[in-house]
Length: 75
Image (cartoon, rainbow, N blue to C red; front, side):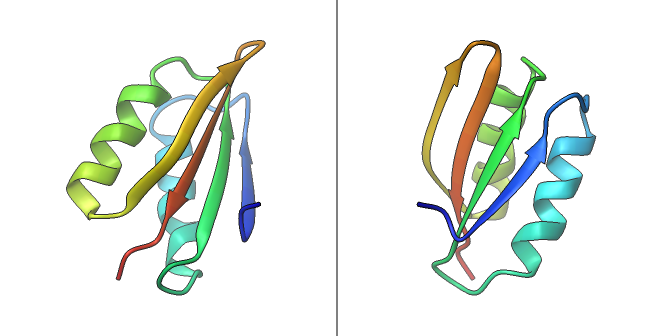
């Protein structure tokens, strides 16, 4: 279970990323953020976000048009 959940459903790029970035700043190192999104582009966006920021994508999946990402904050 994630330490915090961000519901970004209904928002389009770049809002899910911007809101996730802000939410991650409020977490400590090693804590996790669950992000829920309905934007199909969010898959590539969050993969790139984690790659460029150094945060770790723990898991991601899609069910019924909702994309779920679990990201671990890394310093």
